[in-house]
Length: 136
Image 1 (cartoon, rainbow, N blue to C red):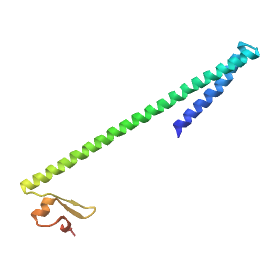
Image 2 (cartoon, helix red, strand yellow):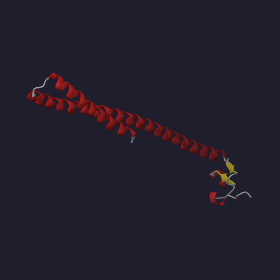
Image 3 (tube, rainbow, N blue to C red):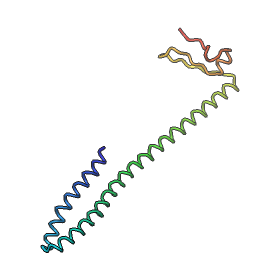
């Protein structure tokens, strides 16, 4: 919400300053009514053009910031996905090594008071993973 507010405030300030100073300039330049009318039209066209440039510039800066942030986030997501693939690959290699070596692995989670066996450990001891005994 902060950045759109900055754009709105910048446009507001630009408009107020434009009206005040461009009117001063027009009235210093001439006091002829027809010339003032023509200059007011040019002044209006110039305001539309310059305010368009202002809004474009401010929104482009905002867009670039969002784009760069999005790009950084995508790189982080890609890194996480790559790490997950490596973890899955390592888990598969561990399972293969356990099968070939007829070795199992296990770990104990003291918080949960839970014994976690690898598939091979359960196979060696002729249990299913659901039937793994829990410690007291």
